[in-house]
Length: 133
Image (tube, rainbow, N blue to C red; front, side, top):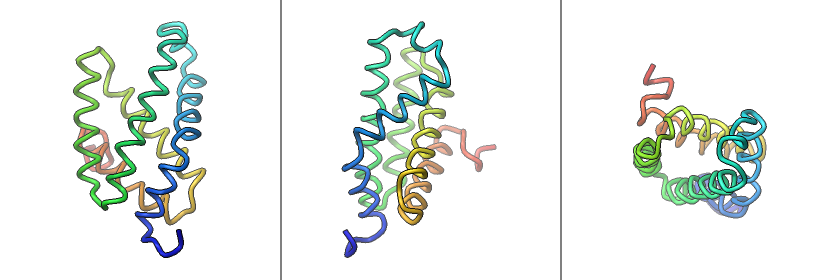
């Protein structure tokens, strides 16, 4: 992986660690908000885990191609789709924040730093980034 550019290394690591990342993010979400289990049950938790996989599956190719706008377009679509299902934008924002935090904890600093730009652009696209404030 050393001959790869930082974005390519980061994307390869995302793909390699998609399962553990998705589980850790889901675990953290449910630990932070125990009411989620009461509200959505086991099936809801399974759907959440699937959603975390989807988020990472959309993040990885955007990172590999060096296109933050590609991930931002996905985040916009995700927020709109979930809003139609009565899931608030705050839940989307929190899942992205937790994803970024988990990546920062697991990945080398250069790769995590590369990926952080994608979260900044994605959150700004739905009006929740530092630039949107």
